[in-house]
Image (cartoon, rainbow, N blue to C red):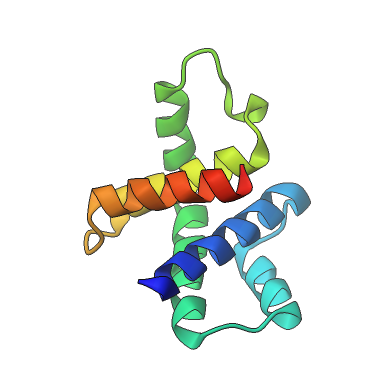
Length: 114
């Protein structure tokens, strides 16, 4: 499903932007789309992923921290940290996507951007 792959890439870019600039998710989404265009389906799903990941960020960060040995979130590379956040959000809250698809997508993002 090409549109979901593109949506995940967009979501990762915006989550990275939020992490770097420390801005609100809505503001980051608006800023991104003011400079780029994209498929409406990818736009919709990426926005859902961004808002969901940001909305559950404390819970997601707590889960990641509890599973990572010898690595604090602050010590992780921003790209890697946001790939993990995105994948954990999808695993917990996107029940219509099989877990193996989510994990494969996260690995692909890591290969492309990490």
